[in-house]
Image (cartoon, rainbow, N blue to C red; front, side, top):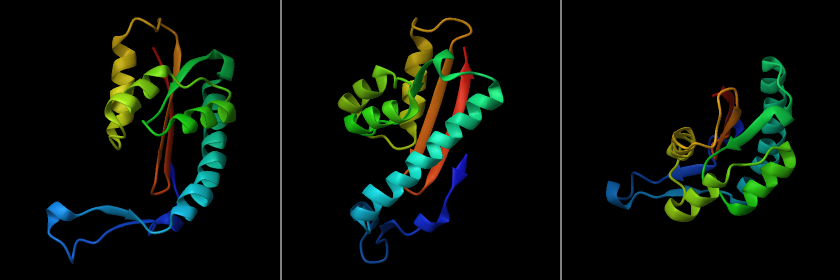
Length: 143
């Protein structure tokens, strides 16, 4: 897991001027979010995946699939091409069905995958997570 505090102010909630039921998280700079943070995420996740796989002595072609949060369809394609590892279709299905659930996306997607009969003992699943506040996590699971 890694974080980058330079994005600490990217999202804010104006909790002083409104009652709690009107609180909304607002992005202070959509351009900074879409471009600067996206480039950071690309660099960090790529390096972190390489490090996690090297530590486990696993090559990318030994990874059965990857899961991540419910983001956007284009993000899945972006990460697949960046990492050279397929993002499991359950992520797209849950994105369509439930939208983005925050940090619980990865838990939902992983739980679905673990309950399915798609994986065999010894299969490797790469679990990716990145947050809009510049926190990244990569883990490798062996079934």
